[in-house]
Length: 460
Ligand SMILES: *Cc1c(COP(=O)(O)O)cnc(C)c1O
Image (tube, rainbow, N blue to C red; front, side, top):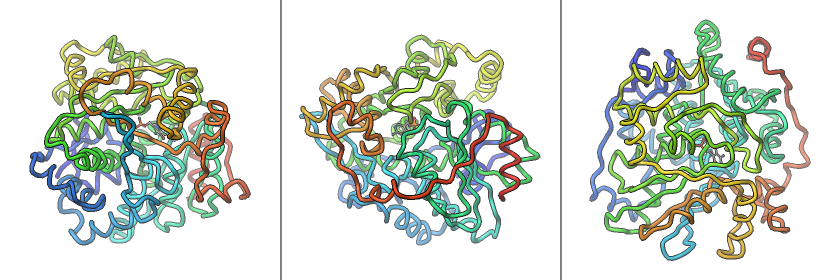
């Protein structure tokens, strides 16, 4: 399988190269040159397999021949060995047609572990063969950073630098990033919001001299391998319901459009999905783009669902690329406009295409709290604020099709929001028990590219 850039001019790469590259050298994002196609027999046959077996079958065509079969199976097995729930991504029935897909049983209690644990193992295997070293840089609204630090800590061939917006992540998220003692991981708090962190990250990648000097690599959802790993649970959840080909809908709490884009690829390669429903908080660039056709950068307003406090949504570029029928020139034009003016207009045919796959809903702060509380009363289930946003949008969009809502993080990760919404404490998982006693190690920097570069160069 070969990968090409959404902006059309970066070199074509195989899976391993695309994974190690992260962002394409023309500023675009890598997508598969061709997509595999799974038929209904294949999907039915997944019904009785383990999560790891499904992961192997779904991801194999995307990885191609880069890893040997046994090696890849082993990597998958290692990746999910730290998940505390036996089925890794269990489905919980909420009502007749509504299910919650629990994606928070990994080591850092958010869905990011599904992809990051796998990427950690893939990097480890790949770099031990090539004897290369890489510098990983990540921008995070909280969960990507903790998942990346957990996946890469102690790995010899990798230095990890995570940029997060100071004061805008939850205490658990911050501590998960700042307390690991491994010397190859570095939590850097930036004086800015998530968009500033993601902009700094992209600028570091686009400085080709710096990029080559430190052998830069990225594990944000700009990295195709992240998307690939997340396709798996769309298949595992669907096939566990034994629906005989019936179409379903997924509601996905969204910020950077990564998780929901994985659902789009699942649909494109054969999973019977009728709609993917974008659920956003008050930072609603995606909801606005889908209802108005105008993609307009706004100001990030901090919310109680901080992992979605994003106004420039990286993976929307991939969605647009497909909506524009793979017209890389047009994608390049739109994003050049966006860099200059902070907005662009999606042409009508592309918008109509997007609307055949996606719809959207936006949830206020009050509604989020109310839904956390309602979920406890109505379904006896504890949800995090991001999941609550998904639940609210899903409930507003119920029809006679099965709805699966993605539960993206454990409520304990956002216990303050949970407590203020319900007056109760969430169940605290074991993995958090000593987090509050450990020393923190954080580098504080202004939102300044030269200073970020200097710290990276000093530490690698
Ligand atoms: C990252 C994250 C999201 C948003 O996911 P994207 O794929 O980046 O849109 C939602 N909820 C939680 C808990 C997250 O960590």
